[in-house]
Image (cartoon, rainbow, N blue to C red; front, top):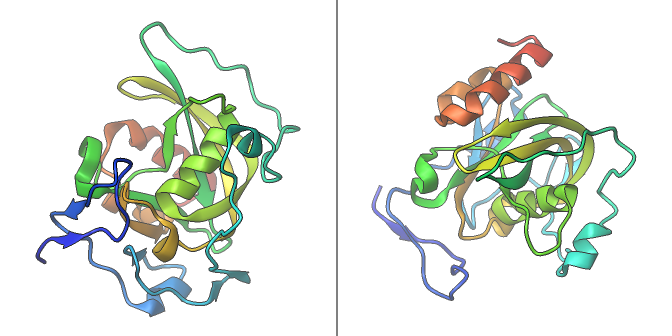
Length: 216
């Protein structure tokens, strides 16, 4: 497939050329719990899935204060204090589980960082809490609106210690909402995650997900 231009510009207002566009899957894959379903920027999706509509999140938070007070955070969950080794930075992301057992992952534009696909995540900055960082990164990279439902674990990557939360989709629309950072978003059965994710840092998370679901 020839290159294409992402419908959204980058943070500097420049066009983003996707050199090797991801191929979207047929609409039928979204309603098949055993299938990998993939949507690209501006792509079509079913009206709803598992009783939750795919609708763009119009009134999303825009300031640190709004993200930190977002109703989808879960301040009551039990999570340890985060300690970050010298030379590394704190980051946060979320493992978003769909009601049918599949997991949401993002495809970084042009394989940024060497990732074919990975979990939505980002560094903690701008006064955001770990949880607020996680839900904002999920929204920016996947277009999904999520609610945090639990703590998953802390995992070291190349330059960050990343805290992952367990989350569930409550809204959003990947086809309409993913920013220039992602060239596709997929919904993948846990057993098929190794087919999409290629980062060494993601392998321990896949292992824990497979163990928890009994689908190793």
